[in-house]
Each structure stands twice: as C-alpha cells, then as structure tokens.
Image (cartoon, rainbow, N blue to C red; front, top):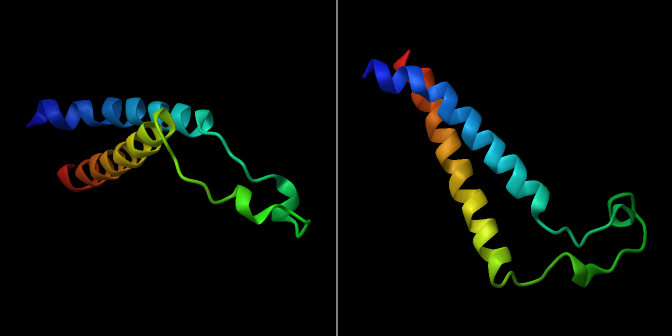
Length: 78
C-alpha cells in the first residue's frame, strides 16, 4: 500500500504532462474574434471528429478522468 501512495505523485505528474501535450496538439477551429463578439463563423466550432482526432480527444478525456481519480486517491490515502 505504501508503494502505491509513494508513486501517486509521479503518476499525477506523468498524466498531467500527457494531458497538456494532447490538449496542445488538438486543433482549434475557433478564432479569438468570436470570443470578443466579433463576426465568427458559427459552423467552425461544431464539427465531427474523425480518425486520429477522435482518438486523441477520447484519450484526453480518459486521462483526465484518471488524473482526477489519482488526485482523489492521493487525497484520501494520506
């Protein structure tokens, strides 16, 4: 049990780095013009993810859930 508790910070750091990389690699169609009330194309924000983009998005969501679970485990196991 102590091995799991002592390795949780390293697991969290690894998950955080992978999540950051995956989020930065994801393509964003929305520009900053739409954020500040500019005339942005409404259809550009809504598109269907296909192929590797869908895999990367789903992996990011799963790793986010694992990161939250590891954080809660670290909180309650200490």
